[in-house]
Length: 401
Image (tube, helix red, strand yellow):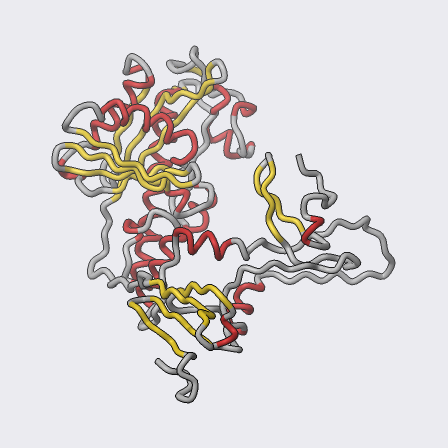
């Protein structure tokens, strides 16, 4: 392709996904057009999916080690309980609880455990892993930043999936119960539980063993025939029922608004992204950026600049701005479309080129407040600094290790 018919030495050559720009016989620019996967829309669900189960684990601390002593399960209709005094050890409780879920009628069910990514997941994962040597079992975990996003257990030809409901509804169960107006959590004296009290029957433990309970609420619990086992199972089952009702209401709410089932989305961000792909993506061609391309672009994102001052002043006014991202995204352009890599002076063919560029910038040494940020690697990880010149990056006064 000739740029100038009167100058045969200036032309463009296109070979597959590469473009070469020659000027006066010299290669000026080389462009590689990267083929990207395009974000696709998803179809709304026709029917609501209510195949989920709630599992809750109560633990105690013995010799600074957390161990389970009660597990309860609620499938929306029936509740099941497993208490330590009925088994040989804590591992037996978990194993029997899991086996109770491994039924054909629960195939495809999501098992929600609130705060599963924290300590509850450790107990379950150890037991589930012990199943895996058996050819009839297979474990497929998805873990991100230490969180269990999804834990798939395959047995025979059936599957169940363990999920952390906290990643979908990131609030305490007590707050969720109040917000969704479902049966409230009960009260239980966790501080009273130890290796010697699991079979305790007698006067209700003192109010000091409870947390977040009023005198009026405590007086309603006082009994001379109070059983730790019965009260623990009652409390644990109530937690399961409360969480089941919360998730059921949330599922109905999302389905009524967006025709999507929350069971298809293990986290709140994935649900929000699913709603976008279902209702708002339309015909936009949005490339999926990953791998080295994502790493290169992320180098240009360093967060906001922070400065420290000794607070002092008279008749001061303080201003703060929250959530600038939405307004910036609305009112400012961003590069979109397929990615193009180039070598050379791109302004030779497009003086108004717009995109991401890797540059070397020399800031003035006399700049009072440097504003251009860069990241440097240290023995303690990556740090963000604002140097006053390129040569000062390694000598910039910061508490680097």
